Length: 245
Image 1: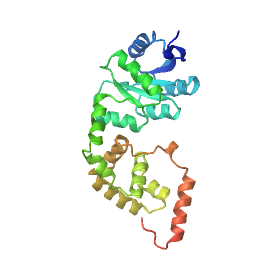
Image 2: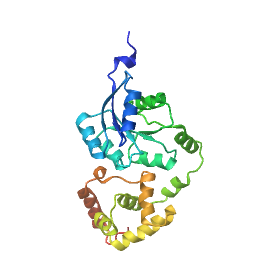
Image 3: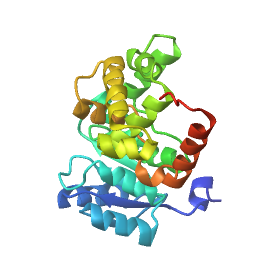
Image 4: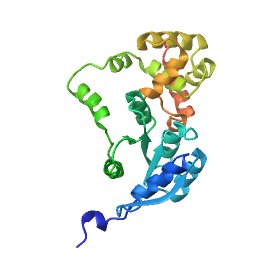
């Protein structure tokens, strides 16, 4: 009698890495697993997105140490409805936070065993988030009530400031932000001054990085259509003679 796992269709896995040795190594390690099927591989972000949209893998294993596979590949693949599991040689917690902000379902260290990688694939395929011990320590600290200074700072932002933070993360300049939110460029600058002060940042570049590290950016293709933002803002202006931003 077959076990429940053997009765299921294998999990369809795509391998994304610029390095042929990494791709071959993953195929060798995972190819003999009955519960997994390596359906294809890609060495560039363009090929990865094409693979995701045409072959529809369940999981994309993304080698984050590949120079030609940027962070943007994570959001591009998740937008194609593929669950992303990142392979990395770094133990940097900020790196993990950024990958999660971009939509990755987990990060597996290259120092881990093949068995751990397989468990991570099954966990992510089941719709769960894969948490390594390093990340779990951070979450456990929060659950135990230890204050997170960054979370405290973020909570001081107003709704309008959060909107501006997200637009900065999308690369918009002050004039474009003002046009998008129907406020003056001077008002945008005033808000940015307040935001930088609240988050203890020094400039716009630090703010842009901060948005990704802490999941504050809504990518443009996931945001509300512009017409809805404009309609909402005009209704607000119609109800008051001196709107306060």
